[in-house]
Image (cartoon, rainbow over all chains, first blue to last red; front, top):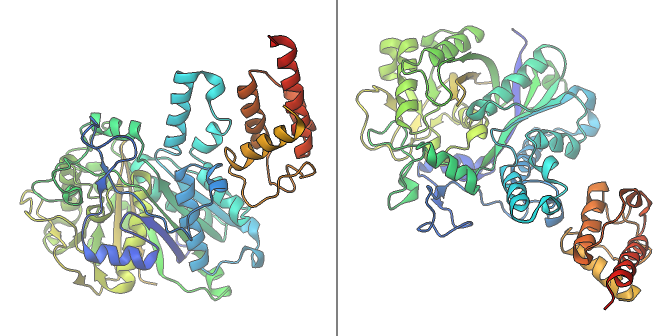
Length: 412
Length: 88
């Protein structure tokens, strides 16, 4: 596919910053942001890993109590990120053919808190205690539908759910809408609100989560030799993707170019990545081919980098397969050290981080990286921000289910 | 329970459980146009009184609710039914 698609707006809410400026500053600070989760039990009472990245929404951005009566936190975060992205893109739906503006919002879990509350009410008090809004508030596509309703966007509207690749897959779906001619503009990204007792317990039982230690901000350690797992986090990020001709016609600023993508399936195991990173490598290679690029064109990689033993090893193996000896000098950034892992939202958050690095000419340091894992052999950006003249970058997303999605961005 | 007490309780459910803010809840207030309620809100509003009073409202009654006064009337009927059945 060769149609030109550009990024004309971005909005982001994470534990490491709400809004583009705060998020960029949070990345450059290079410190983890997880904290003890106290909303269910005192951490010492919880028999699950009770740390997470939680978003502190400023009052001016948060929904009203009346609005929150109708939507889950998952949709709230998406609405805030989408509103920021639409503003950033100076997108005025009243001035557009709204039938040509689409929406794609991914999520791994949807309104998990609402669903959990419904289950609890059912089992404790019976069916009549289940809220009438349980289904619309917990359904995975509520964020997408709510964004379309909020902004009056009547083009194609859909949701994607590929666990931790949902955000990247949402951007691929948006790109496909544009290059196929179905839409001129797509408001696309992903959201996750997984700080829910049953979700924390479920991932704890999988033994996927980082050991909290004494300081939760130091728990997520992507590519570090002492990494122990990932840290669950809330987040949402939304980008405005637009055909270049449409952006030109309305005089929109371009923040980056969506240069291509690659996807594959491990077809191996539900939760364990292929140990040799075969599927991930295939997705990276396809992304390069899609963008008309070679491994030598890649200036840096925003890694999936969750901080689990298995992901980071498989990802390093995949990168080595594609880049060979070049990998020794290829900067790798892992945003999750700062943000934690917002599951389905991760790919969209990291797309924003990738575009910000291309635009700013600065690669943020990976948090909590102290002891290199020599077996991985990666040039992880650590310590301080690293200047870059990057023109072309990849953002990796790999997911439970074996989904591999790699996005390619270039400077606009 | 007289109509003014029922009105007070309807207003309390609207501003409390349904988080309706900034609106004047009077008998003539339109549920949809003035308060922005949708059909699911009406289910929640009626359910709150069903649960309080231990009575059930036939579903076809919801469509006939246009004003706060209509809700007060409906709740008054539930109260009367309850008193008729379970008066000591």
